[in-house]
Amino acid sequence: MHVLEVKLVTKRFNDHGRPAVDAVSFRVEPGEIFGLLGPSGCGKTTTLRIIAGFERPDGGIVAIRGRNVTGLPPEKRKVGFVFQDYALFPHLSVIRNVMFAMRSVGAAQREQYARAFLCMVGLTDVDHRMPDQLSGGQQQRVALARALAAQPQLLLMDEPFSNLDAGLRDVTRREVRSLLKAQGLNAILVTHDQEEALSFCDRLAVMNQGRIEQVGTPEEVYHHPGTPFVAQFLGRANLLSGTANGDSAHTELGEIAIRPCVSGQVLLSLRPEHLSLVATDRAEGSGEITAREFRGHDVTYRVQYAGKAYIAHTEYTHSFFPGQLVHLVPREPAVVLRNTSAPLQTEETDSDQN
Ligand code: ATP
Image (cartoon, protein in one colour):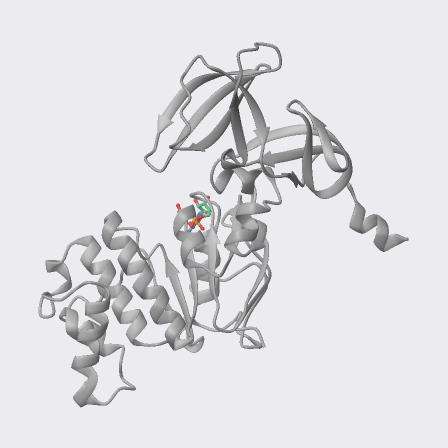
């Protein structure tokens, strides 16, 4: 049975314009950490608030462990949450805030356990402070410790690491993920940070303008983006149009391999790390490097080719310089994206029909 099923959930805040959440559907499987990833304003928080019961959808269903909870208040849903505004109890010290969440643990052990959760989020010397004596990042970590201490079967987290500095964010993220995994807890993480979603989640939904554009594992959405938006939101992408004929397509870069096999007009995505640069001294058929950005482990180049700008990453061992002429050579097949104007015929579809 699914831990959570969100089915065609829609929410409008006004009668005009597009819905904040538009027919959103996805499922969370047992033990899974699921991500809602997208730019600011795409409807992630509203979706999470609908799952928590703080917002009523205009249409659609939320079911937790097979039970329709769409009409139930938050306290009847048995979910835990960490929202951006922390919501700590202002009259309780840090340790008491966390202990409050542990009513199932015996009184004798409660304080010791609460300390262990605080330690896990990197807080060791603030146990007896009141929430208003903490920084925003510390309050966020107390809220996280308190939510984890309650060990809910489904934990909803809205940008829970956003106020932590980069080093602390990485460590806390890793620790929280291992704890969730060790306890077999399910969680939904809302974030606009691609790297955070890719490293923290088992699967994720990429949202844009109230809709889900793609659901998949981090590898699937990164390496096989379904739409131009997903390709460009998850890292950088070169978009090319072309005419496909099976496993290759004729494009502005010449005949290149593609996947999956299709026929007709296509829009393709090629990651910068899948594009090699080969030095040449012939102007014909080559591009010119217009910018070089050293990034430590690799180097990003901008290449102007046939009136269009491309991005390529190379290892730091390969060095090119602005003004140099290069050929652009794909190292991997380009990925065929949806949403092109002409209908695509996939070879799988064709053979299914035969
Ligand atoms: P962020 O990452 O900035 O938090 P988000 O993806 O979580 O963004 P939401 O907060 O869900 O986006 O907002 C989606 C849309 O709904 C936005 O256009 C927002 O302005 C609008 N919205 C959200 N809550 C309300 C509200 N209570 N009343 C009116 N409009 C709202």
